[in-house]
Image (tube, rainbow, N blue to C red; front, side, top):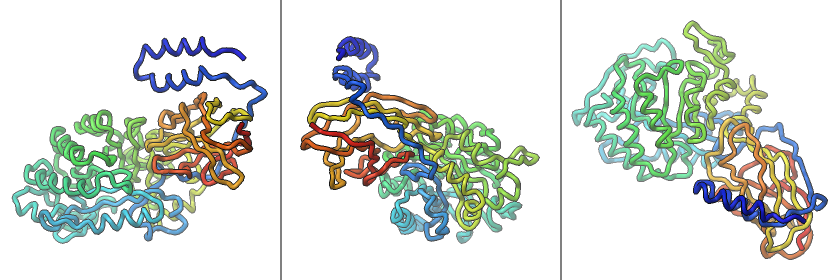
Length: 486
């Protein structure tokens, strides 16, 4: 058997060049010092990719409102519930908070294994609160200035008829009051694992960083940055998200703040206009930084009626197919709307939705595995793994590859983590082959099944992240084949 010492010497030289490469190179150095198994001692398998939709944590389809309001045919596809709250409902009197609706929303989705995308609005032309006060009336009674609008909507997407009020969003009294609310909100919910993303919705109609249809100028970039910064200051653990809404990509002077938030603060990019006035490209800026979030321009029935769902352009150039938007924007979370229009969307486009389920976010395939027929207890063995990410985005939740020896009773007799298979490094539409290390500790000699799985930090013996392959499984572990432990 050939020595690996020359390779080890070369890796030692590489380690001296770049501190950033040291963890990965150190793992490779350890492998280089191990004897390579002879070719006839290796078992090679090439799992077949599955065509079934795979539903995984940290990615997927979303709908608005409660699980109980979703059709039973749609609900199995949903992994995230979206809810926007009125500030006035959460703080009806200054310093007096009512978190009931937030807690009930989180509990409802958590009960079926889902997470939430929450946001708190200060203006909404869809709100029917008394007097149009989405920002609490007591804020204006304290001297904050307001914009007023008597709305007669031309389209349902503009809002509901009636008197609407928005704060002057750079008013110092408004900013001080909202900052105090935000601190209380963060004290209660920062780091709550039931919240996948928290929208920054303190500026604009619906919190979408624009003033349509109030017909008043945007605040300055400096003040917009202040809105973003006060969320950063309050929330240290929860993934923040910021809307970048415009007409066909023309974001205007606030673009520099959006870019700063995503590129330097790792805030997730959001686009609320998919299939209508956006082809999804705005969220591509966050690829590899933070999960992109999509929301439809309107419900499915409206998109279909206007021809936008099928990519038929109107006179303004609006109208884009969902599949094209996903390829352009690399999202991790994609809206399906909610209610009866979403049921029709699924029934009329089931094959598309099932295929895109495996395309949005990450989708990991084990293309090939080579492993020794015989393993030595308490000694490292090497195996070769070829991975492919067939999704449009990386994985943004913590995950690790692990190996297990499954005993005759169907339970793991030993579990160890991979050393060089790093899911967060698997970029979309890329294939990577790694030499990994398998060390079986304190395991009695005998015959076992060698299995592989992807685990989240909360997982113990049962992996919670599925692979897009067809192999026998045991409690989330994918069985590669038989091995003997000496």
